[in-house]
Structure formats: C-alpha cells, structure tokens
Image (cartoon, rainbow, N blue to C red; front, side, top):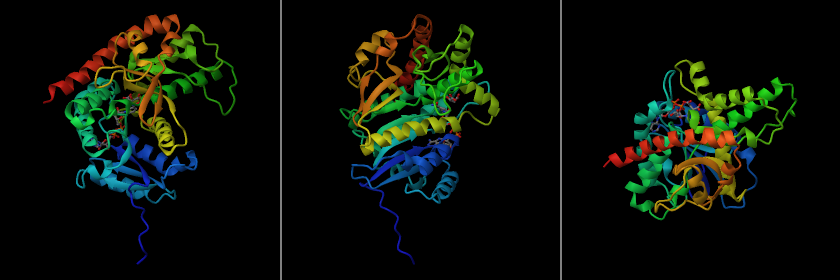
Length: 374
Ligand code: NAD
Ligand code: LMR
C-alpha cells in the first residue's frame, strides 16, 4: 500500500471555503480556483505551503461528485468535500476566506428581491456557522448570493447581534458583497460599443469602468464618465450602456429561460476577487484596491474606516454601499469617497438619488429580518 501523502489541512495551509459549491457558480468557481490559482501567485513569503479548497453544499451527492472530479486535476491545490452529514465545521475550521454562492437563483419574471425570504434564511444560518467555526478576527467573507443589497446587511447584523465573540473582532470590516460582475459587464459592453463605433482598441486591453452603489437595477451606477478608455459615447449609446449594465442579469436569466441566472460570468468575476484576497493573505500584495458592497458603519455605529464619514452624507446616509476600497489583512482600511465627488451632473443628480432611495429599502429589509429573529 503506498503511504498517503495527503498534506495536513492545518496551520501551513491557506484554506478557502466555498459554501454552495455544487451549484452553477460554485462548480465553475471551484474549477477556476483548482485549475488556475497557482499561476496567479508569486512565491509566498509567508509560511504557507499549500492552498486548500473546502467545498460545502447541502446536496451531499452532488458535492461528493464535484470534489472527486476536481481532485484529479493536476495542480498543487487540494480539495475536500463537506455536507451537513459530516458537518459544516470541518469545512469552515481554519478557513481564511469564505465565499458564499449558496442559495436559490432567479427564474424569468422574478426580481432579486423575490429571492430574499429563502436566501436570507440560508445566509443567516451560514453566518451562524461562520461565527461559531471561524476566527472572526481574521476571516474574510465574500457574499455572492442574492439579493446582495439585503443579504450583506443580514450577514453583518446577524453576526454582530447574535454572536458575542464578534465584539471587537472587526469582522464587519471583512464581510463584503461581491458586485464585481457589474464591473466586468461594464468593461465588456463598453469595449463592444467602441468597436461597433469604429474604434480599434488593442487586442489585449479592456476598459476599466468604476461601478458603485448596489447590485440590482437602478442601484447599480456605472460611472462611464470615469472610465480610463478613450471613448466617444453619444447620449443614446450612454443610455444603452447604463441600462445594459443595470439589467445585464435579466439578459442572462431570460436567455437561460428557467435554468437559472449568470453562473460562468459570475464565477469569472468571483475568481478575480478571490485571487486578490489570496494574494493579500500570502503577502504577495500589501493591499487590495477593489470595489465591494460593505457596511459604512461598524458595530459601535462609527464610520468603518477613513473615508466612510465623508461618504455617508454624500449617499444620504445609506449605511451599505459598493465603492472602491483599500483592503488590508485587517479588512477595509480606506473608503474612496472622492469617486462620488467626481461624478458628473447626471450621475450625481439623477442616478445617485434613485440608487440611494432603493438601497435604503433593501438595507432596511435585511436589518428588519435579523431584528425579527429572536
Ligand atoms: P444554484 O442553484 O446553481 O446553486 C446554489 C447551490 O447552493 C446549490 O448547489 C444548493 O444545493 C446550494 N445550497 C442551498 N442552500 C444551501 C445551504 N444552506 N448551504 C450550502 N449550500 C446551499 O445557483 P447559482 O446559479 O450558483 O446562484 C447562487 C446564488 O448566487 C443565487 O442567489 C444567485 O442569485 C446569486 N448570484 C449572484 C451574483 C452576483 O453578482 N452577486 C451573480 C450571479 C448569481
Ligand atoms: C446577475 O447580475 O447576473 C446576478 O445578480 C444574477 C441575477 O439574478 O441577475
């Protein structure tokens, strides 16, 4: 019998837990991480010898199959399968990053808000497990499940309210809603329209377009005025682009015709995010500069980080907002409020007020859900 050389999944490993890993996003994201992650990383100067993917899903058969399949891929990243039968603790224990695509997706005719009742229950349960099993002073939690605008408030307020060990842990600086897909879409659609207009961007270049606010309809504010890409957009093109980014999710839901929502593009967007967090935790980079949907106030109702106090009046007191951030291993360390000052008149006077009024309702819905649970 050959001696088992399975590495111990303990102190020397950087562990990424994916909750809902047997689903459409979970499978594709796990594949990208298992197959590609090591190519993105420089030699670590921390004492990490390997990276481990802990895959959890309530569908036991499916997650066992997905994990067995992934485990044959010839990369140095190890994988393990977890389900309620063996307990979520084994998945979450020692995890540095928890990614959550668990929950139900939309069908045609549904809004993201229609998912709230089911997914808020799932998110608060998973939040309880994270609070019980993870080191709240270190772990990063990335929430993909919808509606992001309401579920991040559920995740943050549930942990702070119901888990005393969260006090002074700073966990609220490390829980983030993933809105990267909106940024990915804005970049893709802008490049497309430029080509249609006769411009010839370089074959390997993509525009950067900041997108702020939330993750649904008019809460999504793509800031084409602040794109780095040379573009001559007329009014119609701009209107078309804004609408397409705000309702890009509907486009995919309609095309899949009852078989779910965006999975592959979301896995790609999520992968880009996870790579950044792994690079940060391995010491390859000192800070992440990225946009996430985060609370702007901490457990004591103080601004979460420098910049948040300036942002809050600009967004009329919306306590959660997607905005470019600087993130260190301790969590959000700077909120780039100035991006709001740089908005043009239309973005600031028309788009922002609509975004903020809808966002506040979404946030309140999440907070009320947690408050109503004993
Ligand atoms: P899916 O149905 O394919 O997968 C969801 C998985 O979650 C399933 O395998 C299911 O068994 C699992 N699950 C359900 N309850 C669970 C629990 N309590 N613990 C662990 N796993 C659980 O759905 P999908 O297409 O992968 O989408 C997942 C979620 O992501 C949806 O809510 C969707 O709306 C959202 N989403 C968000 C974005 C974004 O930009 N943030 C983009 C696309 C989809
Ligand atoms: C998306 O933007 O594609 C996701 O939020 C999924 C959805 O329901 O649209």
